[in-house]
Image (cartoon, rainbow, N blue to C red; front, side):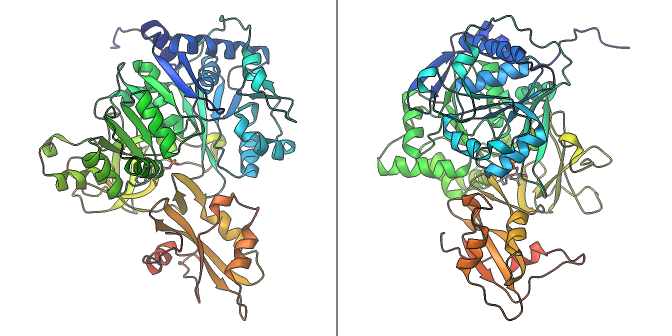
Amino acid sequence: MQGIMQDWQLTTNKILEHAKRINPTREIITRRVGGEIVRTSYSQLHDLSKQVSGALIEGGIGLGDRVATLGWNSARHMAAWYGTMGIGAVLHTINPRLHPDQIAWIANHAEDKVLILDTTFLPIIEAVKDKFETIKTYVIFADADNMPENSLGAIAFDDWVAGKSLNASWGDFPEETACGLCYTSGTTGNPKGVLYSHRSNVLHTMITMSKDAMGMGANDVVLPVVPMFHANAWGLAFGCPATGANMVMPGAQMDGASIYELLDTEKVTITAAVPTVWLGLLTYLRENDLKLPHLNKVLIGGSAIPDAILRAFETEYEVDVIHAWGMTETSPLGTLGSLPPHLMDADIDTRMTQKLKQGRPPFGVELKIVDDENNDLAWDGETSGRLVVRGPAIAAGYFKGDGGNVLDENGFFDTGDVANMDEFGTMQITDRAKDVIKSGGEWISSIDIENIAVGHPKVANAAAIGIYHPKWDERPLLIIQAAPGEEPSKEELLAQLEGKIAKWWTPDDVAFIDEIPLGATGKINKLKLREIFKDYKLPTA
Ligand code: AMP
């Protein structure tokens, strides 16, 4: 027997329609690239998004077409987002911190037809524009007066949408329709596309709004420093309009002074970013003897949170820290570190030890730890195993089938993280099985660095591993086994990488080793290397 309830399709346009109807005057406050502050109500955002839909339809864009953005967090970016998703086209957020060649590769792989970008990124795109195979239309997030000279034949966003009707029809498709596309470099090989559906995004939104997750409401003012190109700004680009919370968009300025100014003037109650951002803010607060009277909650994730940041927020500034773990593939929230009931009254050290762990999964995320034969391991807070995850907002594969089947026989996705779980479901990451380096919340491909380094005639073998760094969490160390009779210098090895990788991927140091350890299959044994170099101190640390 079936239930007799309505079939209300979970499509993301309903989020903005709800915002316009229920919280029309709540706002998105944007610091634009030029520095000026602009306020856009949810009612205005809705209409602007409809105009984006109109412009896209006029340009021949429809169901399933990919529209890319290369943009900072802003109201215009939100309009591009909802205007694209509303008509069933797919909003592809591109990470501007990638090497320009990689951006071109991703745009071609995604077969993007439109690219909407901030002026900041114009030089990157102009440099590789001849490599784009499918982009027909370039739009710049600007008005005519602030439109930069460009060789793309781009149109100003405000002109692109001007005069478009508000009649574009939204949500005329099933909830399983693709909605957003976000490539991740947190896997081996080429970046892979995670293809969110409307249903997965709406369900993830509901998960994020719950009290032990982000728990925002219509009275909150939320500052997502985490970019929209990082897995939907951790869901905030949906959760804020869904609840009616104000959004404060920092644009390109994420230094301590700029973030503090927004926290203070807009009376921000909830904010979210990777640990590196908070180091900048805390330094600025201390240097200027400032407090955070309005801020209730800071979400910190993307990398493990250092003890010093946690304690500073909690004890010096009385801000509740919510440590979060997740992945692009998990939409992204997987666990959150709200204190469980049995520890609410525990002493400060017990509470801080708990908060340094990655947290507990909200309803809608199923976690397990398993051994190499996929047997479940005990939740005793000590036994470590591969962390696998299942749920309605977890990837079932990658775009175009890249990477093959990623689910086990029970439908669990292997995160590549190694963790333990305690009896109350608190997850703690203890290691990483995947061969990548995460610096300041962004991935660095060790394999790309190694492939270029071994191309040097004086090198027999090369490996790149992440070494602890107090500011960036990890920075790459290049480890070299010289070719017989050769003694390559650090400088010539780094010169070999120059121009072929993004500048910030450049290893902080080069170490030499007689023989790089190999595993049974001839692959570099990274676990062994990490063990050998576990006490290595980078000159930059
Ligand atoms: P991304 O897809 O770029 O969001 O990266 C996801 C990966 O970042 C995870 O699989 C972890 O390896 C790492 N990560 C994310 N959050 C945390 C955290 N709170 N602590 C430790 N590692 C994290």
